[in-house]
Length: 187
Image (tube, rainbow, N blue to C red; front, side):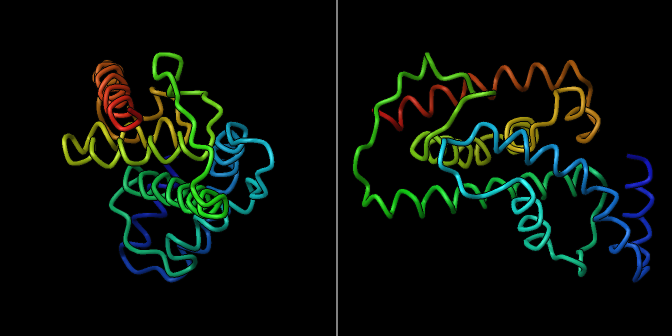
């Protein structure tokens, strides 16, 4: 991870070859995150983890990467790109069904981490997460990194530059806040 920071600093200084070395360095980590995320997707998903990584990389700018302030900035953007890709696909799938067969979900049975999502639940989480971002952007960023990028809470603490204890406290708050918001959206 320290090598990533060095490459990001090289990019900031204008090194034209830094972006070329960034993707191969991060590819395995991004692929693991995408694989974990795709494992929670509903059956019949046609998007593969490799495609998710490549599409997220292109959305981030491909070889013309913007200036990243640090690892947290990069991984936050990568998590957001993957989230948006999956949200866009869920919306497309939902539109193809013309909005039929919406399911009522008992929020008490929904475990935010590790849930097998259908499109409606994924969209509800997306809407609630957008509202959480307005309420508390740091907690929303934590959820994106932990839930959508599938980083452990300790990895999130490192990427965000805050203590593990703060991350755990913020995760508990964000999860409860999201449960309440999703419940409100689903009723």
